Length: 135
Image (cartoon, rainbow, N blue to C red; front, side, top):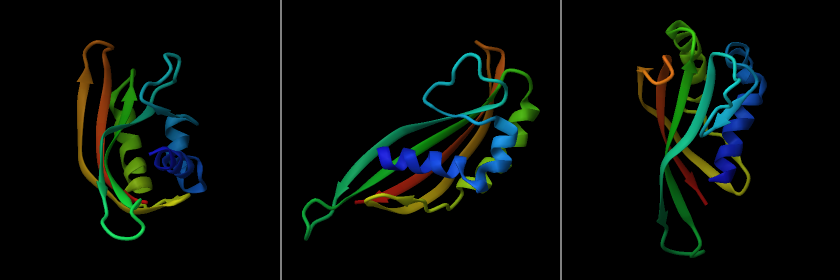
């Protein structure tokens, strides 16, 4: 999973990610953003992960079936989130990243939905992906 998270960050910081970084800033946060992050910002987390062992040789082969959640957040307005949304999906939809020691098999967007964070008075768009990584 570490290599997968490194791959997400590498894509974000690549030249392909320039348009998204121009809108969201230089940081892709893992799990939680810092409080001083300017709007909008992106947080990524692994919502779930399962390992399926592959029978045969070598016996250490397996796949990781992951649900990856991106949260596009803004404390200012929902328009900032909707501006970043197509840039994020263009960057990660069907993007089979190069991972050291692993094979990235699938990166498929499964859902997206906007919501209001009533605790912070901010806005969030959740974007979920189904990813499969082989080892």
